[in-house]
Amino acid sequence: MDLKRIESLFGQRREGHTLPQGLYTEQNSFDFDMIAIYGQSWLMVGLECELPKTGSYISMMVGRWPVLITRDRNGEIRAFHNSCRHRGSMICSPGSGTSPKLVCPYHRWTYDLDGSLFAAGRMPDDFDKSAHGLKPVAIECISGTIFICLSDTPPPIDDFREKLELYAAPHQLKNAKLAFESVLVENANWKLVMENGRECYHCSTGHPELSKTFPVGMSKHFDSGQDPRVIAFEQAMDAHGLPQTPVEGHWWQVARFALNEGCVSISGDGQHLSKKLMCEANGGDIGSMRWAVDPHCFVHCTADHVFMFSAMPVGPEETHVTGKWYVHKDAVEGVDYDVEKLSALWTVTNLEDKQLAENNQIGVLSPGYTPGPYSQEAEMLAQRFTDWYCDKGRAYIAAHANG
Image (cartoon, rainbow, N blue to C red; front, side, top):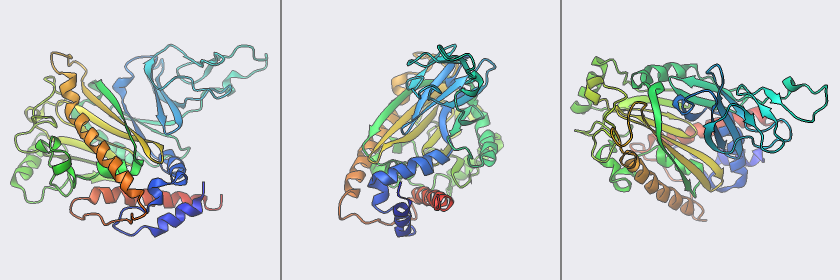
């Protein structure tokens, strides 16, 4: 990894503009992003409900790195590098499931759900099993959510924890269930995918379906301006004890905002997609409680369901976008909700964004590409994202320049 090249690219970045070409296209930049950005940040896995019982596990990829999350016999959720301590094989293939033990398919080394080595055949009598447990990954469970960090020194998370617990409490995320999950391959750099996901400059024309319910004209989803309807919404939320004032840290944002008039959910017709609500305050008219975490995700919680978007880099010009839809654990499929209708709006939105991001990537590859200015009215969150990216990258270079 050529840090001097990365430092040079950061040095070319103009304030208020998109990134230099090499940060979107070069293999060296991708390698840097994996180590300095994804390897040093808190990443959202999903919700605790995806690990409903002892032995439940999630096997996921962070770029090229396999990670394993389990619920052990004491009910504790743990995370590990998904790499056998024998010869390094991946223990569980990507996906989810339930197993009383974690068994490597190569030589059958077997681990307990807490990561300790249970059995290793044909090893010498003095072999120390206690020294060969799975290597842990930092994990934080916050109000029903799961976050991991691959760094040995994760960024501070206490402020985010406090705010998310406050804003998420009315949504009962521990009482959710995963209703649907999809993975979309986008042939675009992950930063282009995320910049697109952090602005709605393109939404009125790029997402006609989403625009029916989502307030795409706002300069920030947090800003009410002097709109009497939005101010009335904020006052109603305050009256019902639902926090709505925007809060943010360097790498995260949380807020509740009003949807378009007459809309109570982010759906095709603006109405609830599940009859069994996750939050019944104000008759289920509570807008969307959104949080966003850099580098990779955003989440929208309406009264009836939760949608999570996560972007994981695979290569300089390939990103895998995972969508997860959650409903109340007691909601009955086919009675309270229909999976196809539940997933329809964000699915078509993600497909539209895929086309936009891939087209963006092709244009960025042009020898005629030069970084352009962000709209200070419509793209403040996109600029906030790339500013954070540059700050995070420069901090890593400063800490490792003599390494």
